[in-house]
Length: 443
Image (cartoon, rainbow, N blue to C red; front, side, top):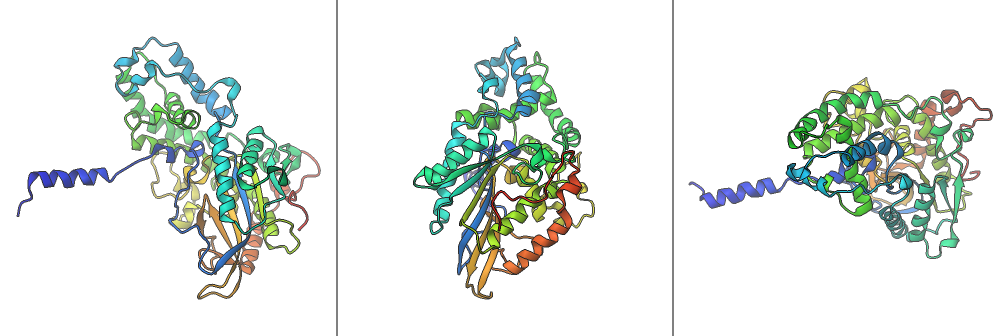
């Protein structure tokens, strides 16, 4: 029996309508905060479990623009735009450039946006609601940059009833702090802030080439470059957290595939900079993992919640120290770099910077007391990344992707055998370097 034409068209339109794409969830390290369900597991404590202690590592909230992004990509594009005589009104989806003005000035670089302040406050409220039975912390730790200090301040305002009941402890970002810092990369000569640039540039040229050609066809008088494309896509994220939206986010300007290209270029960058493509990443992340184990497992701690604010460099290195989002763990590849090819996308990768380090990215390690079906009664440890539960490799003998405290202790010690020894592996040029993060006090 043949279907009526109207019904066939309805079914076809319905099938196409199912697909939806949000560029804001594919902006890598400048993605506005969101909570990807990756994997789609319930973030609530497992049946029969109650959280008794937790430690959080949080990246600062949304800023006007990162210095490098602005100077390398955004400012050259906006300067060129300011000096062009192109009639943008005839440039199709780029016609908004007729009246568009940049939302970023030199004076505001690295400053926290109002959206960032609000989102940090909301995260504080959510953490308070999540751990309603735990005592408000007496101290919250933050690296000393203004954007991390202000993020911590807004977070605390959402977390506690009276702000002065919680002190913000500033932790120096100086090189000589060694591992005893929330910015251990600063004191590690083996870490390079430019690592990954060479590799990501290979894919940048590939994914931007069709865009350069297409935009030139729309506006032949404007000499679009690969860096202009990157700057325009970065403006989608930065303008959104400044003004609330951006015309650069339109799927008429950049398609879903274009955004996936931008995301993958950044994933390559982070892979080699602070991910599994760098031999020093796990070394930088291990001190926080080890210190967190101390705060969760010790008997003489003074707080239920340990919360620290930092920059984008530290969270990925902690994930490496934990063995999470490791592409090779799922592909079975001996060469982890082969899982991030430079000339084509690995769509099945687990290393996705948009999900790992958006603004306000957070890693939570929870201690739970459990009396669950099928498991021994006792204490268990669970890790969440942006509220999504993660299973630690080789440490999954508890309910809800958790592991027993004994297994967690063994896990941390084993990771220490791989990634411990900050001073030896970083080879700092200063004296009195330390391998230990001790800012939380003696455990």
